[in-house]
Image (cartoon, rainbow, N blue to C red; front, side, top):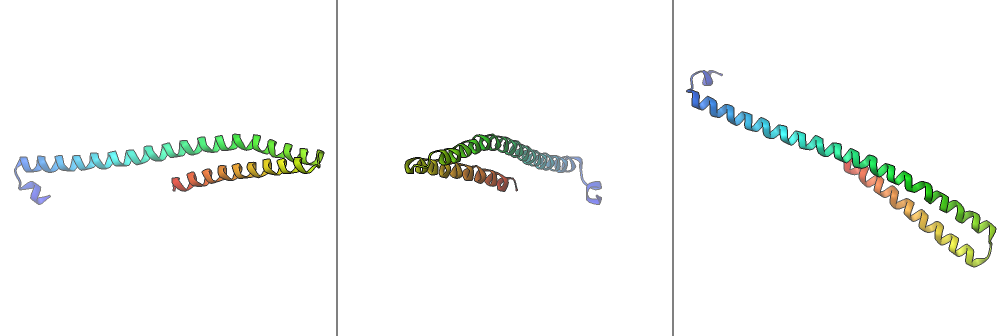
Length: 107
């Protein structure tokens, strides 16, 4: 403060301009980070909703396949139903990976 008291006006103005410029830059960086975080949270909510909406039909298909296996015990039907169930399990696994990936990206 003593230095500022003893300097001419131009130096003080330049110093304040520099300080204001830095504060604006830091504020812009902070706002960008907050906006990015908010966007990621919104994307996460959308992903959770989409995955949840997919799980219901997947579970219905899996249940239907199990019922078909019980109703038609022939080998061909069993193989097709096993394939359907394996693919549904695979798709549900991929959905969980997306949820985990997004969760990791947030933190």
